[in-house]
Image (cartoon, rainbow, N blue to C red; front, side, top):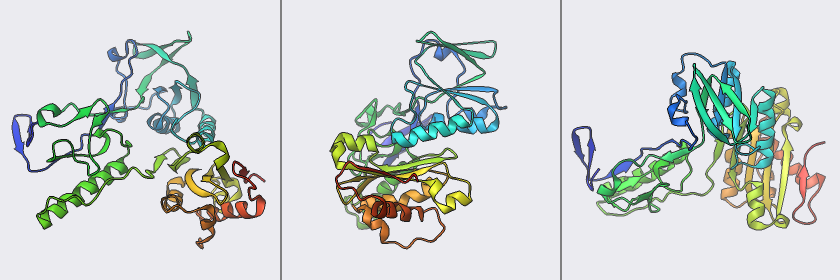
Length: 358
């Protein structure tokens, strides 16, 4: 790549404007022997010709958890290995702990260990751990995260980058003002498809305005505010804003109140036999300004936007009573949360917790 051209094979393509959207690649941890084995990643695992009897996954983040449950449902014995006994370390601890128990009921095994060595012989992987234990498995999936795909000779194009990704301004422009970058290849942004789409809309808006006004102006900016996160297990975990542990770390425990409604108290989830999850609101101050939400449910991703909108507009928990929600719907559970705040126990001081368990 150069300042105003891209080389693809033997061809050179010149451009006025260019958008880099090369995404990310699997991060491979530095484990002895790993590079000499035919391990799987989230890109080539779908090339398997048959379902493995035993699948071991290194990494307990979203990719490992989602694929682990999928293969468990297909009949594989699944073992998930992580450096800590919790999963989804960026998620709310209450929700991720409950999701882990749910997955354990599906016979998914979790092991806390640091992998020391990996060997592959006779169509079988052998894993050795630092605690002295070992494990044999038919297939091994590496799901330890992603890293930006920046192997593009960016220096020749005058584009600043680091191992964390390409550096951009608020309009997604790189240090080469004719080149933009979006998605996972950008430094410091969430690695979600929907976020790459958001950044892409920012670029298209600005370039369209420039084309029709003939002015070098930038109108749209990308935002890091309230990016939704959803782990797509059968019991989805959808979140936005602060989780409880991060809110306490920033504002102090006395400033934070949480409200949890378990779905075994909601008519729609009872009739659908989806009672395992909950909604958890993280609020700040006496009147409960909503600053975060964590939803564990088969429909978590569909419930999330209403609370996400309330957080974006800096609404407090009293605003839950402003809308008339159809009954019995999944979102009507939010009415139950408001009733909990009003009728069960209005906190006399911040730092109180209300749980809807009856």
